Amino acid sequence: MLNEFQAFILGIIQGLTEFLPISSTGHLYLGRHLFHLDEAGIFLDTMLHIGTLLALLVVYKQEIISIVKKPFSKMTALLIAGTIPAVFAGVLLGDWFDSLSKSGVTIGWEFLATGLILWFADARKGGAKTLEQISVKDAFIIGTFQAAAIMPALSRSGLTIAAGLLCKLDRSTAAYFSFLLSIPAIAGGIVFQMKPIFTGEVEQLSFMALFIGTLTSAIFGYIAVVWMIDFLKKQSLKWFAVYVWILGILILSLQFTGKF
Image (tube, rainbow, N blue to C red; front, side, top):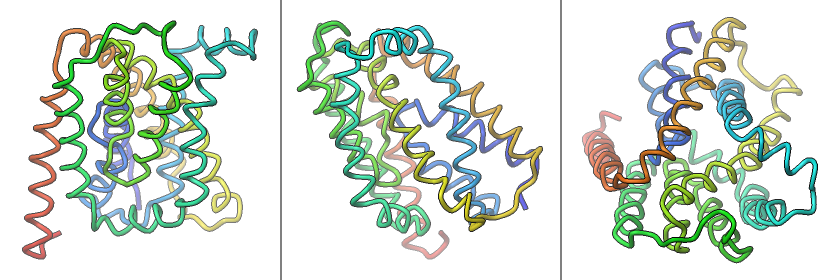
């Protein structure tokens, strides 16, 4: 049974790794495995994702208000174009994704792949496009990378930031748009996860533990978003690439020896 301390740690993991380019799904799987909570799946993940969604709503409140006031703006078109690939991926590959997430058999390789993508994109240095200069084509390309992150340990933020750099966005804009685009993606993922919750096909968890996990996820998610946008102005993604390479090699080694 999930306790308050475990929920607190998992909330930190979700909040940070949702927006740092190192894969929240992969890290949550490792966290649940460490705490022997492999059965604490959909309901826990949903509440933790609600926490990070709340963080995004706070950071992007002005943008959201602007979209509500002007629903036919360019930004609305960009978000729709960027979200379409993820919708198709979720509908067509959702069940397959769930099976991979539960087994964890591929996450070592996916961490390695995330590192390669981050390293390659960082080497390209990005460009000078600002938020106002992003095209619908750019948004669709970034959204396609986001859809590829349906694999458990392919980092959604990592792939979308990398795609932004490849589309010649400046570094902070790549992170800024990546996180803005994650709002409909995370919200959609929560909706998809609601069916088994409403039908009672989920584990029973402590209300206090879920509250702590959700709140912690929101707080650390907010910190991660603000920090990452500023970090990318001057710093390299290669630090994150090295981290996920080390983690991927460690996981593959443990799998090879039968210890994971």
